[in-house]
Length: 236
Figure 1 (tube, one colour):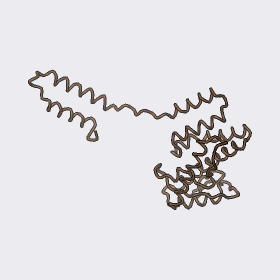
Figure 2: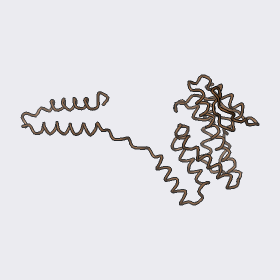
Figure 3: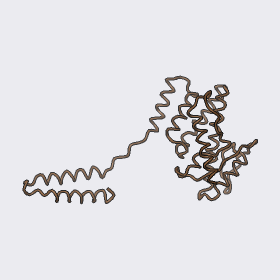
Figure 4: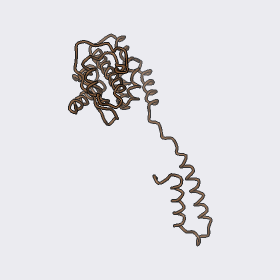
């Protein structure tokens, strides 16, 4: 299984990089989602379990109703892809939820590959915009589930807007708004910091108010250390 996971991880990176970094007429042949399961499932650094490669099949199977023993599969997966995902995630502690997540990500990657191929083939604008809207609608979920990095999502958003908004000004404004919405948020201020600074100032002022001969620097330092530990604990 480790060899399968390693292959999947490389293949999905190649597919995503090919889509994001090359113009439609420049892209080299890319590994398609039909031959690889999602990168997010193969990357233990993102807190996800390993998954299996999904090999091509000529027919698709309907998702079917979800039951206690059957996850809510995304549409468009082949029977072989389903079986290999089930085998790969057999021992996962939250198997049904993970099967559902991975299947939806695989379907997303398939749509991305379809968009790439149809764009390269010069498909009608209406068809490309429909695919772009579908990808754009699922982009937020890919970010929330850490299946894409912020940089990857930004590149994909820019590529989708190229199709959805032909006007340069509107496209630039939409991308700037998206970038602002997804910018890293600053850490909230630590209320303990203000409390510490106020009490620190009071201790220093009291020390400075003493006659120079009575000022004990070591005593002040000990008082400040006691204050620090009382406010922040031993972790700082």
